[in-house]
Length: 203
Image 1 (cartoon, rainbow, N blue to C red):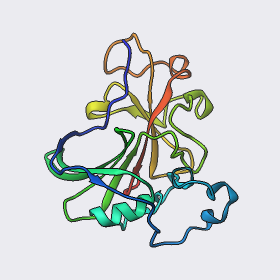
Image 2: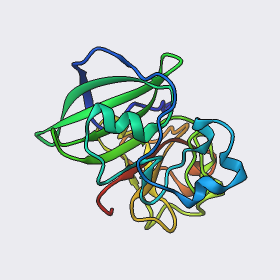
Image 3: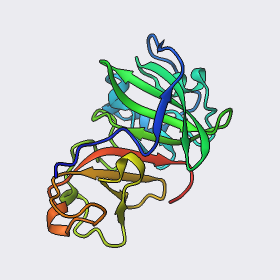
Image 4: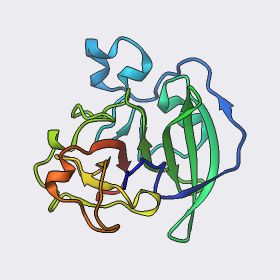
């Protein structure tokens, strides 16, 4: 069975029309990492998934168009919508570039950001992990750090990022065993990161 990456663990229902985010916006907060020469070139390359969030978006960021636009600092097109997760209503924004979904930012309606799904290779984690990083570069075994994905990601494996309680990596690859059974460690070695997930609440 060939496992293909899916968008997220929730089924999204788009409600809003696309919103064009023109130009780059300044962030409301200051980050010492912005002083690094590596972050002087281009808005996308300067963004990272950290233990605190993604770019300028953190757990205290209101789930609103203007705040997300400011936090992303890039030329993204936003699509808003609603979804249900475990029977609860969830609001989300899809950040798009080149007609592809690069991030999904979600949380409770009129609340703050609770989760960010990153599917964009140009936004790595602060530990140097990006979309396409092999499982073997991060883990030797899945036991104790990995679990079966949920929802639309149930055919993939989610693993906690080392040294982080808020970040996890979703891996996908070829698996010819029974559905619902974790692949062997040998099989997982060739699987690659398909998504980086940040959650406001510790896992």
